[in-house]
Length: 278
Image 1 (cartoon, helix red, strand yellow):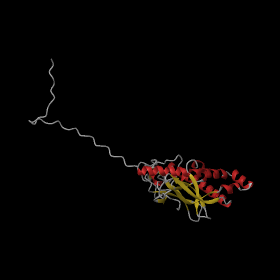
Image 2 (cartoon, rainbow, N blue to C red):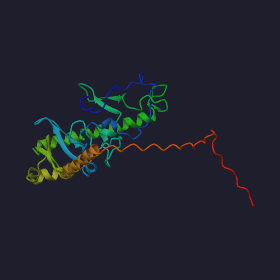
Image 3 (cartoon, rainbow, N blue to C red):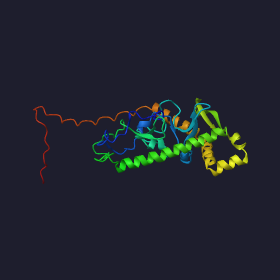
């Protein structure tokens, strides 16, 4: 359960416990991941991700690594989620899209348990869709979610093999990423690894051919191209800082109340009189 990140109350999905539970569709809010500054990626997502996010690798040095998309530079801040909960990027990573469901690997087994975040705002909505039928069978909603999770998990397995191949070729090296801000000292991000281009170019023809034919080299190039998106993080950070520093708009003035016409000395209000015709 180490990669649950923004899942607050994940519980195993159970046909008996959740037999009558209903889920309402997402309202389009991504507030649940507003405090996540990086998101795990499957390698198949690199092409879409590289257009706007920085792809780096993280993990223990000398140990397993895994690709992530950088969506923030400060702790507990996702620069791609607006204060209203809107996702500001064109592509939403699959790790985010699978919410509120998630697969958790069983101990000493290759099988997985399905978990559901009971903190999801649509959990238990009376007008939502059920997950199970009265007989305990999967409804179309749950079938679709399980199919997505299964496909995603297959891509995660391919991603691990991809990273293992990079490590076996000694292509991943530690890299410090600097986010340059206007008028401020750069923010230094540590703990990441990237593919070393010189080491990649130094590979012999047989290894390069193998990477090319297997499709892994295309993923490597997408990763390298994404490193130029660090500047996008600076732009998002500056925009967030400007929004936080902007003064709150002044409240609209209350409409003036119509004043009552002054009364005559005798206490009677003046009345309009119709003019006489000639």
